[in-house]
Image (cartoon, rainbow, N blue to C red; front, side, top):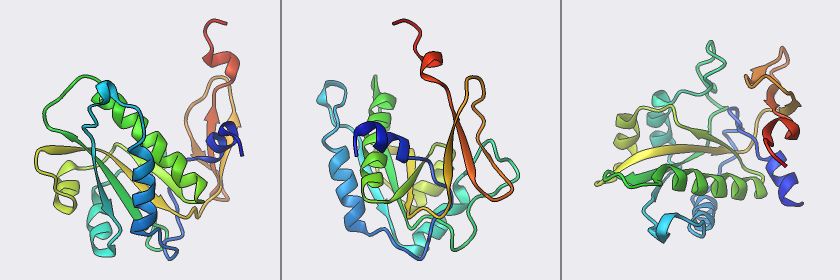
Length: 188
């Protein structure tokens, strides 16, 4: 599989096969890949927490917003929830490019997960207090959550030149519009 095919396969999943567990060791391997990512001035300021314990996952779940465009949906039902989370923490002291570094390592993590057949969803909509109760990190604040689990839904890419809102059809298939190459390239 080439990188284009991997990127095409790496989707945001919001429904998982919860009974099929992603192990702490698998998550550690994904974070090891993220540790190889380039970062601003090679400062390597980000830290990670692994949440695989069922009780901790259940504490974390209510503090997460799952799908901004699907407003009537409160997130995956029991049995369809992620079996692991990664919390990406950044130092409380803000520095330039921290947000960019978070995006880079998150991309490495979800691509690494995809190579192992694990689905993921990057989540910015969460309650920091809930995350800190489960994964406290003195001197750091949670910047991004990544939900991990074996996919329990079908996600289809839709070629589209003007729409960006994803949706679920009557069969529960998640459709994700993507702009055409001609739309996203401004020059050249």
